[in-house]
Image 1 (cartoon, rainbow, N blue to C red):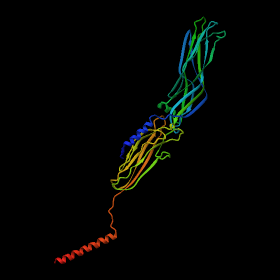
Image 2: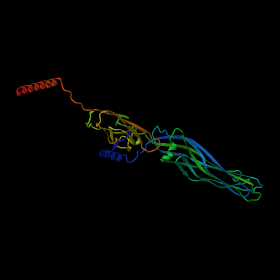
Image 3: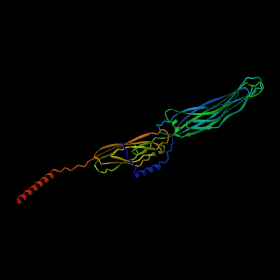
Image 4: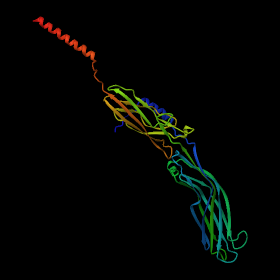
Length: 381
């Protein structure tokens, strides 16, 4: 199959005008939001010190709370952004305990920290400030130093939001499954046995951090494009019939254009349209036109022109296939195919057939001419 595409100056001017109007992608105002209340969880780390001295134990990226949200259904549109919000708070509790030794002179110390608490999801990372419990002490007897000793819970608000429009990250939010959102924390605990008389033999510090509150996941998206041969109705197949024409004649070119229809209240809520590939037509048909990118919703492309070469007689038919897609504005772009059916008949010219009366007159003339010739011949003899 051969492909013949010519680009006329007038079409280039139309394409340039469309390109000016489509200089920037539409901004989505279509939003889907999922909200989960009562999300909570916690994580702990424990430091253990044997003998005089101190030990610090740390654990990174511990899950304080987690929630799964439904992925975006791309049949709805093109996903252009994801935004996470949390509204809640952290709490920290440290428990110091010790064993061994004798007498009331024994001492143990402990402290707990939690640094870089993070809201985490694909392509999204939002950090929050450090919360910590300063060093405190326990001993066998006496208030407030009784052993074991608990400090906390110490609450700290944790509220914020973060978003992503990165295409690679957005792939994780699109589909028919779930996307996981976590609140993570780096936990640390320190346990110390003091060098006193009849000292403790072991000390433990357990540091526990939790988070509870509300999570929301918001999807920003654009409605899919809708290519059509008509500026109002959804027309995906166009029939162009040149009819019956005489061989060697020059029938008028047939034109068509493409519109990106929209069904949203605002045209900016529909994604732009790309014409990626034109396949066909074959001789004797030819097409003047070109591909385009980001035709905004409600706009119509420049005209495409189809010509019919009548050099050869016969019945002719062919197709033009237009391969289109949503403009690359996000995740979940659709592909479309529109078809132009072409038909035309080229009729060879025919010689005129004489009418019966004309034939009779011609015969009489020939007979008369023959008689005159014979009379002239006798006179000459």
